[in-house]
Image 1 (cartoon, helix red, strand yellow):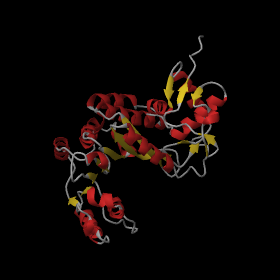
Image 2 (spheres, rainbow, N blue to C red):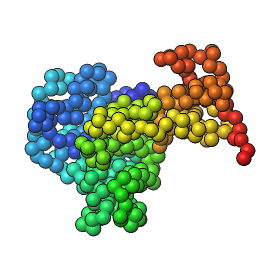
Image 3 (tube, rainbow, N blue to C red):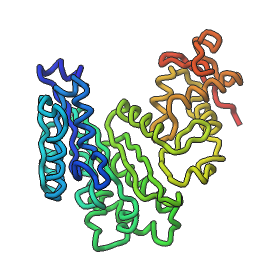
Image 4 (tube, rainbow, N blue to C red):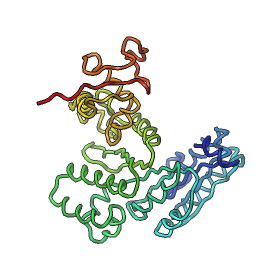
Length: 348
């Protein structure tokens, strides 16, 4: 992004914004995210000269703690753009401010306590400009309870939209916890897509017993490149995978319940779906991945594995063919421009 920005500005900038930043250090002494962001920027000459940071928290004690922790960072004065720190409530005024401000490429982290200050329109304001993506903390436990609570209806309406939220209140009545969770996360994604964010990727965190979701980090983007980068990051942080397909969740119980995500044979499903989706078509590997991976758990290595298996079985052809492609980690590679041809669908 900086390379592109340099064509239009002699002083290109990228930004990191954390609107619910918390203290500089937590009670156990560990560093908060703002401190880690700044320390990383100081280690990278390009970031040191181009990164703009904005931190906010409504708690004066957190703000005071953060200021002290930042002042103690070695060589903090060498940052070309010193951190900006606010102490304020994130509300409709903040939404209006970001909606009317043209921002440089920005990665924003929105971490409210519960749901106050979190709305679909606010997320749209944070990602509206070129190169801007956002991650927000989705407190599933509180929002699950809030869907049916008339006292917080305005917050649910702001997040999901009034019409969708009303339908959700009807649907979740008497539904099992598992069905409620799937439905609420699906409707969250739909509400964000409605406001112009086609790429939505949640990473779930389970409670200690592994049975229910406590919260999720939700990545939102307008561009497939950002989506792909974050998908790879979340895949690496998943606590389980099945046949190499990541779960996109962290569960403390996974060590004792390894079958929690298993038994679904996800790669067999991927192979079948590719043959059905692209029947009778010829596409490059890059086109196959770009058109199919959104809203699925699959990452590039899963597609390479599935296509190699299909080619070995004679169900597809590739150019260059398997014999002329390199081996990597015991498997034939699929370059971005490798052409794959799927046979027409069989007539029933």
